[in-house]
Image 1 (cartoon, rainbow over the protein chains, first blue to last red):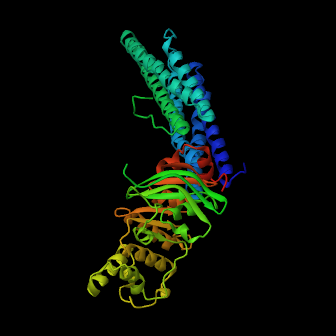
Image 2 (spheres, helix red, strand yellow):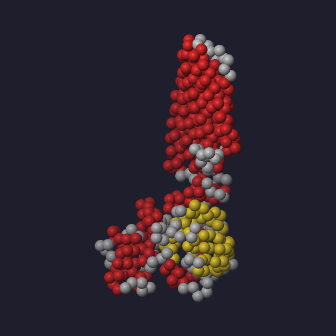
Image 3 (tube, rainbow over the protein chains, first blue to last red):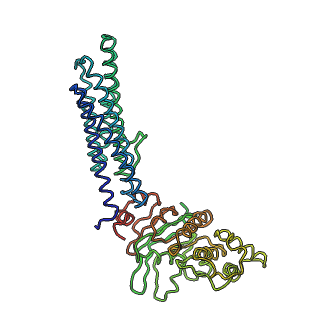
Length: 221
Length: 252
C-alpha cells in the first residue's frame, strides 16, 4: 500500500512518544537508584533531565495538534493520535514523580540510613518499574490483553503501599530520631503508588487504541 | 428503527453490465444518510434507483425491491411522477429553469395543482424559500432571473424547488461539490436543519462532509455495499478493513 502524507507524521509521532516513554522509564529507575544507593549526584541528574522530558511533551503536543488540524485522521489513525495526546502528559507526570523521588533522595542521603528490614519497598519500586515498561510495550504492540493484565497488577502496589504506610508509622513511633527519614520515605511510597495509578491510565488508553472501547471509570474491563 | 426506505437484494444493470450487486439497506426516517465510495462505485446509480430516475436510461434494468413506506416503487402501475414529488432530487450541478426565482419554485406547485389560489401560491413559494435559507437573499427580487444568483444560491433555489412540492425524502447527489467553502457550509447547515422534517440521502466524495452532516454512512465499492453504520462509528472504528482503508486515504 502506498504511503500517505500522514504516515510520515504518524511515524515521527510514534518515535517521539517511544523516546518519551524511554526517558520516563529511565527517570523512574534512576530516581529509585539514587535513593537506594544513596547517590546524590545521580539524583541531581534525574532532576536536570526532567526539563528535557518537559520539552519532549511540548513537541508531542505541537505535533498531535498539527496532525489533527491538517490531516483529519480517521479510525485507527485518529485513535492513535488521541491516545498519544493523552498518554504524553501521563508520562510527563510519572517523570515528575520520579523527580520527587530524587528530591527525597537528596534529603535522605543526608540522614542516617534506614535499615532495609522492610521488604515492601523494593516490591513496590520493582513492580512500578516493570508495570511501566510492560505498559509501553503494550502500547507499541497494541496489546489490549497485556494492558488489562497490567491493570490488575496495580493491586500489588496498592497493597504494598498500605503495608509500608503502617510500617513507617510504627518506625516513627518506636524511634523518633528516624522521623524525618521515615516521613520522606512515606512520600516516596506515595509517589510510587501514584506511578502505579498512572500506568493503569496508560493501559486503559492502550485498550482504547486497540478496541475503540473506553474502559476508564468502569467496573467492566 | 422505522425504515422510510427498505432496499432488498437490489441488482442494477446498464444493458448487460451489472452496476449494483445485491444491495440491501434500511434507511430510517428523518435522518441524514451519506453514501461514500470511490468514483464509479455505484453510489449515484444507487441514489437514482430510489426515485426511479434511472428509468430515463433506456438500457437500465432493476431486480430486487425498493419499498418506500412499505410500497414497492418498482411495482407495475406505480405513479412515477408522484414518486418523484415525494422523493425529490438535487443534483451536483444546479439546474434552475430559465425563469424567475419565483417561477422556479412555483413551477412544481402549479403543475401539480397543490395550491389554492394566487395568495396561497405566494405563501408556499415563500415557505419553500425560507426552508432552504434563501428567502432573505431573494425576497426583494423574486421576479429576477434565477441565472442572476450565485452558484450556492442557485443550489439552494433547487432545494427550494424540491421542497415546494412537499416531498418526504430528499436525494442529493454531491450537492456542494461545485461550491466554494462558504456556500458549502450553508448547504451543510441546511441539510442538518432539514432532517427534522425530511429523510435525506446525500452522495458525497468529501468524507469530512459525510462525517459532519450525516447520522449514518454507507460505503460502496465496485457496486457492492461494504458497510453501513452510524457515522460516528464509521469514522472512529469501522467494522470492515476496506472501509478503514478508504476513509484513511489508503486508496481512493
